[in-house]
Amino acid sequence: MQSDPLFTPLKLGAVALKHRVIMAPMTRMRSAQPGNVPHALNAEYYRQRASEGGLLITEATDITPQAQGYRGTPGLYSAEQIAGWRAVTDAVHAKGGFIFSQIWHVGRISHSSLQPGGALPVAPSAVRPAGEHTDASGQNVPYETPRALEEAELAELVSDFVTAARNAREAGFDGVEVHGANGYLLDQFLRNGSNKRTDRYGGSIENRARLLLEVVDAVIAALGAERVGVRLSPWNGFNDMSDSDGEALWNYIAAELDKRELAYLHVVEPRSDFTTDLPPDANARDATSHFKSFFKGPLISTGGYVAETARAAVAAGRADAIAFGRPFISNPDLPERLRIGAAVTRYDRATFYGGDHRGYTDYASLAGETNQDVLAALPRQSATDKIFAWVP
Ligand code: FNR
Image (tube, rainbow, N blue to C red; front, top):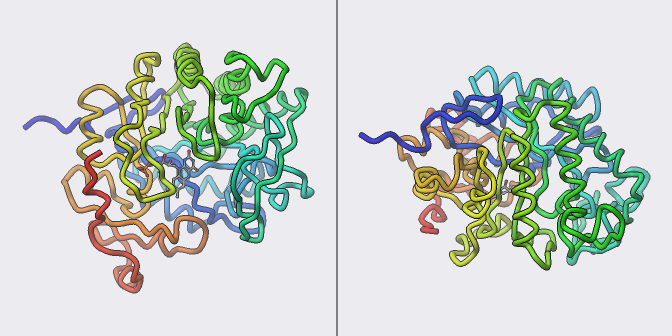
């Protein structure tokens, strides 16, 4: 029998994986309050999803209080948070798994009610994103026009990323993933729809990429490149992002990152919109293949994968590993299910963001690790997920 391409070893920098089914970073907004501290419930969630030789990437984690954009997202800047994360990493390591912390700053995707001192959110430029955002009280309100960061503040931002990365190691993480994707601060600098600066951090592609590369280089200097990954979402319009010449921008960034011997580059495919349940857009461009021609290190691809498409991507050498988002929410033992071809449980979108254990730690594994009575009491969960009939 031929070996399964998803279940072969892979080295991502300092970690030696036993399989290539990775858990994608997912914001779940369930840290303990006050203080945005990871707690026992979060440790149980990650423990359930850990597997021997498998990699989990955490939900995006605030590098400072200013970095926060949603209620209940955890941070990595206080002693309590580091201790809380330590319980998470210990639980994952006890199962033979690996875990990276995704470190972020949301930039303009925030609201003054979530910011220290009620200040305006910050951004490369005072460009208001279209649409609405949820404020600290849970109301949907129009976005505010952010405050453009002073050039002098950017060095401090770089050092905030470094401090968070060091804190991640102190908390026992195997490495960090720098969040350069999905329209948050570093992505806002990259693209000229949101970056209108006229200093060294705006204008040309080299200037717009400067902050991301400075952050990456500084985090590499602190942790070693073999413990640093980077996530990007090329050609993705989420959070009102746009660029006038994406091709040139992404080619430049891919080539620059290639020089840095990262643990991995993580590409979010533009074909899939995780805010809907629609099947992936078959006409969207194949960002992973595009990046593979510029970036020679390990490449993780995410976005609308099912078992067959994940296997095909790895078998064809388009990607080295596949990260699954939504399927990992409702299938704590997703790698095992994919390995044996078991049915995959449907996720419940209503419980993605915030709340308690429901829709979080009560999804059953095949081994019946989770309390079936709790599951049965949840009417929204059905057996096999229809979205897994997609043929992207
Ligand atoms: C996400 N995604 C995401 N991405 C990221 O880089 N940091 C994050 O914190 C989050 N948060 C998040 C929360 C939830 C509830 C979902 C569903 C998604 C995006 C995620 O990592 C992934 O790229 C998409 O979900 C697409 O993969 P799937 O779901 O099609 O496998």
